[in-house]
Length: 237
Length: 275
Image (cartoon, rainbow over all chains, first blue to last red; front, top):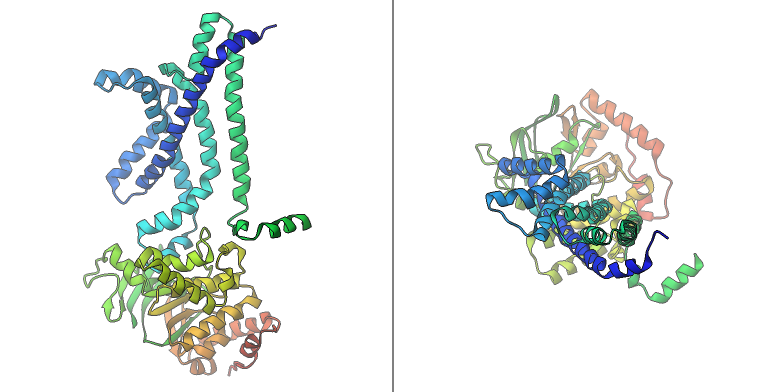
C-alpha cells in the first residue's frame, strides 16, 4: 500500500489550514483584480497619453515575464530598496498586479465588443462619455466577459500555489513541509492534489454553468409571474 | 430651428458631404431621400455631432451648437446638453439590451437630466402607452419584435422632450409587415407638430407627411421641394432615375394587406405618379 490513510488523516488538519489560506489568497486577489482590471482597461483607453503609456508599460511587463519571477522579485528583491512585505502580502500584491494586467485585456476586449450603436444612441440622448461608459457600455461589456473572468479566477486559484516559493503557508507549502518531515511524498502530495481538485473542479463546472446561462440572453424574470403559472408551463412543455 | 451651413465631411479618400446647407424650421417635417452612400445618414449624424463635420457649422435655435465661431469644439458637457434637445432614432433601434423596456425609456431623464424618479417613470409609462407597447414595459428589448423595438426607441427619445427629432432610416431594417406600425407612430408625432428630419425610403410616407423633400446624391443636395413637386415633376435626371428605380422596387416588395385598417389606407390611397 503506497497510500497511508493514517498519515493522511494526520496531515489533514494542517493541509486544511493551508487550503484555507489558498482560498483566502484567491478571494483577495480575485476581488482586487476584478476591480483593478476595469480601471487598468479604462486607463489604457484614456485621453491622457502619459497615463496610457505608463499603464501600457505595466501591462506589457506583467504579460511578458513569468509570474514566479514576479513573486520572487517582490518578496526577495524589493527589500533591498526598502520595500519589505510579509509573505502573504507580497503574494497578494504580486498575484493581483499580474492578474489585473490580464483582466484589463479581457475587459478591453469586452468594451470593444459592445456595438458602436449603443454609444451613439446614448450620446444622442445627451449622456456624457463617462455616463455612457458606466451605464451603457461597461454593464454590457462585463456580461460579455464573465465566462473569461471565471476562467481567469480558476487559473488564479491554481497559481496561488506559486506563493509556496515565497513561504506563504498555503496548501502546497504546508504539503511540502509535511512531506519533507515524514518522507511520505506519495500520500501527502496525493492528498494535496485531491484538495486542489476538490475546489478547482466544481469551480470549473460553475464557470461552464454560468456561461450556458448567459448564452440565453436578457430575458424578463419569470419570478414576477405567479409560481403556479410557471409550474403549469413547465409541465406542458 | 436647425440650420446647417456649408458642411463638409470626408472619410479617408471618400468625400461624403460637400458643402451642404439646409434649414429646418420649427414644426417642419423634412424628408431626406437619395441612394445609399449619398450622405443622408452622415448629414443627420452631423446635425447632432455624432459625426463631427470637417468644415461648416450647425446652428440650433440660432446658436452655434457644437463649436464656437473660431471652430473650436465646445465642452463635452455643452455638446451633450445640446444633443439632448434633439432626439434621434436609428435604423437598428439600438435599444439598451441590458435594461427593460421601461428602463430604456427612463434612461435619458435618469442619466442626463436628473429628474425626480416618480416623475420620469410616470412620463415613460405614458410614452409607452402612446407608442402602443405599454404591456411590454418589464420585458427586455430582445423579447420584442423589430416594430415594437423601434417604437420603444422613439419613446426613449421622446422622454428627453426634444424640440426636434432625427430619424435615420427608421423602418429600413424592419420586416415589411412591421413598417406600418412605426410609421403610424411617426405620423402621430407629425400631427403633434414635432419638428422632424427623416431619412427614409418610404415614399408613400414622405408624400403624405413631409413639408419638404430633399434629394441627395454623392454628398450633395441635388434638388429640393414639396413632395408634390419633387415626385411629379423632378427637375434633375438623377432625381428622376432614383425615383423611378425606388418606386418600381417598392411596387414589387409591397407587403400583403394587413388587417390593420390604418396600414391599408396608407398603402392604397396615395398613389405616386411619375411623368
